[in-house]
Structure formats: C-alpha cells, structure tokens
Image 1 (cartoon, one colour):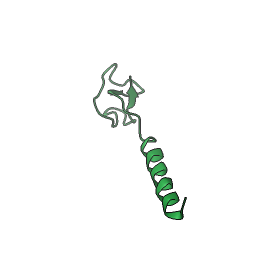
Image 2 (tube, one colour):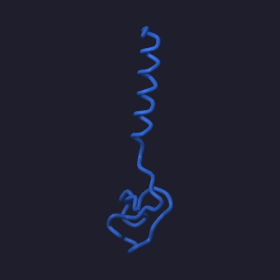
Image 3 (spheres, one colour):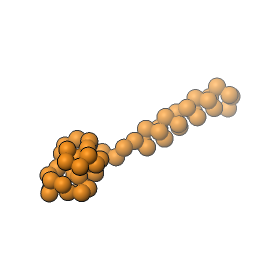
Image 4 (tube, one colour):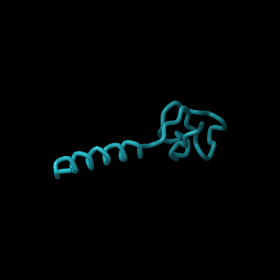
Length: 58
C-alpha cells in the first residue's frame, strides 16, 4: 500500500473514531439536584435554579 493510501485510510479511521466520541444523546434532561422536583427539559443546558449542568436521563 503506498503512502497516499495509508494517509487516506488513517484519516478516515480518525474521522469515524472522533465522530463516535461525541456527547451521548438523551431525550430528556434534568437537574441532578432535582431543584424543580421531577421537571425535565428537551435540550441540554443548565438548571435555572442552581446553575448546574442538566443530566441526561433515559
């Protein structure tokens, strides 16, 4: 295999590996401190009460 093909293969492997390392997708998010009891959100973000990062729930 020549050098050009090795570079192409290495690049493709890297792209696929990095794309699978993204943030896991959840359908609902909730404050881990449950500041608003069981309230959930559709998008990731921060809790409007305490400012903590919302945790994805299944």
